[in-house]
Image (cartoon, rainbow, N blue to C red; front, top):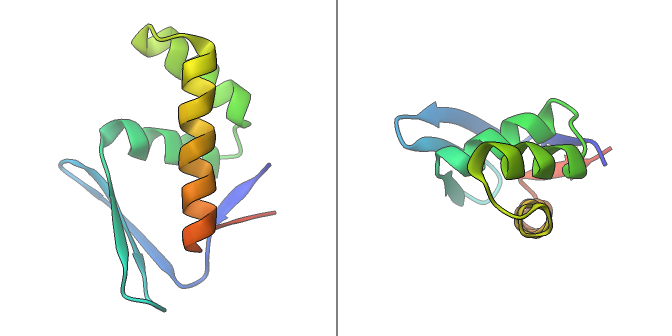
Length: 86
């Protein structure tokens, strides 16, 4: 699944990761550096499994756990309307 920021979403990097702001609702998400890196890879077109494997290799966690975490984050961002698939 390819992700992109929704048209009403602003994103900016911070010292602590990244912030996503919905101009439509005024709600924002703060991502820690790991979450910001995951989002960067997903927005660049990397498939979830590839991002999960990158995290497993880089951070020494089980691939299944990494996949669960990346999938959960993706689902939450989609549900919030901050990102869209396609």
